[in-house]
Length: 407
Ligand code: FES
Ligand SMILES: [Fe+2]
Image 1 (cartoon, rainbow, N blue to C red):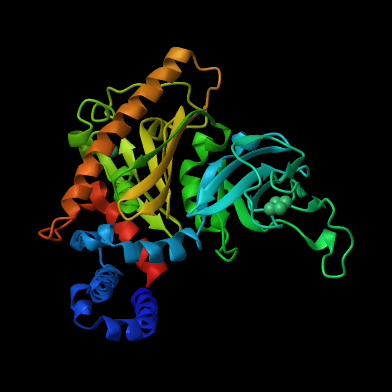
Image 2 (tube, helix red, strand yellow; image 1 turned 120 degrees about the vertical axis):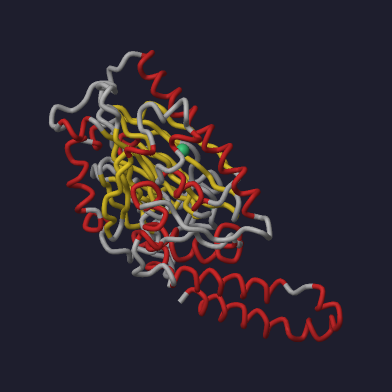
């Protein structure tokens, strides 16, 4: 359990600190942070427990420390980002053998590469010699050569060369390789599981796959990508992307004409996803080149989906927009975002119009969420009822997911 884990760790820290604390004497009274930390983790745990099995019409927001506690963030990094499936990018980014890009998951350097066996692999980007970062950026390579002492590895991670090391009994060249992590591609998105023990992602997303299959998201190609840091807790951004309650207020001029709050419709969450339909008013017509498989209902809505912990997206007939989120601190999140288009021959002006709308809405959200984070640091934040499931139900679905994974 989260708080047991945290409490055990805190107890270890306390016993290790006893001698120092005794020497510090009265000074210790000025540093009560350990006790405060435990109390805050206990509060969060209690609130998460209280979500389990509770219907949407009794949903309430979480206490502020859920979004501000650094101790809780460390638990989230360990139990979510290192143990669950985390989205890294699109498969079209590595379409040819040797294509690669580098990235990180909560501090773990990674190479995403299409191997010479034509399979997408996620390898450690840390040299097996003495730990240097092997490669930066993106490109196409047959081998990754370490810039430090020139050990080289093929696209499967196998050691190919170790200059001057020679033959030694305690070192078998062919047994030396870069660690490789579990990887799955779903609808064109590449995911990694760092501890290699998460249940298969595709199975967790079966019903979501049925819901969105006619959009043919796997055929969409990223034509716009950005990376920034937002000064908000990562969960605020997941929740914000996944609730339609704010669409008609924060995005009055941008999204409200297409996807007003009043038309949002929640759909049931599954083990590894949750989401809602952002329905277009009747007067909104086709917004680009749609796949012919789409039925009239599918043409008239976006499917909002989250594959937690850190991937949220919105698929419409002509595009999918998405964020990959990774927390850095309790009030900072790295936001990679992109748009992939079904029609790769789209005119520059139509492409730019979609990019502009997306970036304008992102700027509106950023401003709102950074202000929210300032508010959450107040000592006067209280919990409150959430809006009905169609509008804020995904916030509750997200709490339930976190309760299932963390408790
Ligand atoms: S650290 Fe990579 S070759 Fe030495
Ligand atoms: Fe928004």
